[in-house]
Image (cartoon, rainbow, N blue to C red; front, side):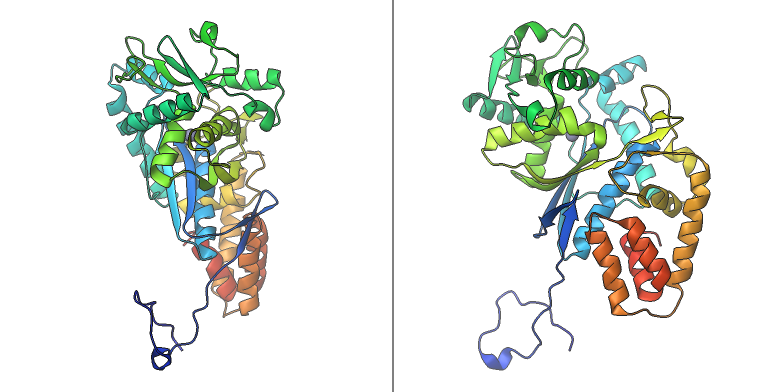
Length: 395
Ligand code: ZN
């Protein structure tokens, strides 16, 4: 019997209870080997782009995996509320816009437009929320004020500095390695004027004073702009509340960015953990080194789209464990095309058993095991293959 939609006021009296009980689709997701019981709505925060340059395959991999995580959560019965930010207040962006003689937010919007085109071509669903840092300045200031009240931050000459304390140790890093990573990501750049002001070298800015060419907003601590980790803590809290189910980003964001974002949000709200689970997508390498804008060692998504379809590029990214770094070489496009052809051919076969479709679901719920799900789908064909085509948005 078809199940009627649930009524808002319920049914009073046995005579009205004519339908079979509703069967809920539920599943137990595992991520990084740990169970993540699924509740609905599932809140997913994805660290998005700093819009100062074109999208390369390494970025795309993060957003394609975030998209599939959302699809698997929906498959397990959850409604998904996602938030993918745009870091449009950032020194790298300011400098790039400055070099082109453009205003930073107008330049950022033009880069965002190109990024959105790439995401559409890759079949990545738009997030529920797409917060931009420049729209959340009051939330960063409220975060700073809460951290000051909790005595987890202090004011020095226009800075609000977060007492990071044991953030690095909790991330499993010794102080030297933590400092090295923080310097790479601009937390403690050479000659940083905040160096002399920090109580401890590991403290990071929640708020910092703006120079002449930086965007600036008025605050109780003077004209300034947010620190990077504080931006994401504020945007996540503003769009998803005081905690998320899964925090997603590239592997290089685990520290210092996500570790400090989570620590700030936890210290300000008094609610921990900020993220029930984290998905850090493995870096994509090329010619033996990590793809990066800074080194020019990269393959652009827009170039790849001239050589392969969106579904082939999705499968190129997805047919591997999500956390493992990998090396891109052009020959992989042909392999992804062959894998996709085999899946489509399997999907054209008559129906398979319900157990086969269940096996595909089980593989996906087990740490987003796309290669395992593909093997089952290609072998069993029918409904199992069609289910996978739909969940991975390959059609
Ligand atoms: Zn972020």
